[in-house]
Amino acid sequence: MAARLRQGARPHPVLPLLIALTDPARLPDPAMALSTLPRGSGLIWRSYEAAPAREALADMSRRARRHGILLLVAGEARQAAMVGTHFPERALLGGRRARRSSGARAPVTAAAHSERAVIRAAQAGVDAVLISPVFATESHPGAQTLGLIRFAQLARLASRLGLAAYALGGVTNPMALRRLSGSGAHGVAGIGLVAQA
Image (cartoon, rainbow, N blue to C red; front, side, top):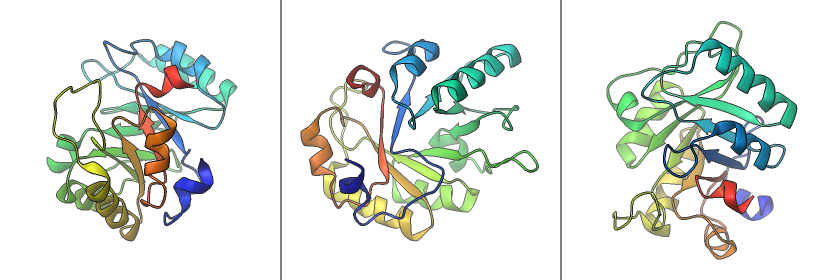
C-alpha cells in the first residue's frame, strides 16, 4: 500500500500513512482506537466541544507512545507539546495560524475541502491536509464527493505547497486504495479505518 500511495507524492519524515479519526457516533472512544490501530499509524482525537482535560490528554499521549501511534487533538490544543494538532477547515479559513510550542515539532494537520482551503492551510503553516470527501462516506450519506480526479488535483496542489495530502472519505477497502495509486496521496484517513485495522 505504502509504495502505491507514495507514487507522485512527496515523502514526509514524520507523518504516518494511515490516520484514523474519532467520531461521537461511530468511534467515540479514542483509547479503543489506539489499541486497534497498527504501530506507525496516527489518530486524530476529535473533541471540538470541550478540550480534553490535561490528565486525560497526558494519559492518551502515554498510551499512544506505548502503541507507537502519533496522537493529534482536534481544535485548540493548549498542550501541543505533548501531541499534534488538527484544525477543522473553518478555523483556518477564519484566519487561524498553526501554532507550536517552542521547540516542539508535533505535526499539525487541517481539514480541506477546496483549493482555497489547501492554499490557506499552507499559509497557516500546517504539515498536512486531510482532503475530503473523496468517495461516498457513511458519515455524510448523500453528500457530494470530490471524486478521484478532483482529489488528485488538490493533492498535487498540496504537494507543490509543501503539504502532505491525505485522502479522507470512503477509503475503506482495497479497491478504493488501488484507485488512489498515483493520485499524489501521502496516505489515507478515516473513521472506518479502525474497523478495517
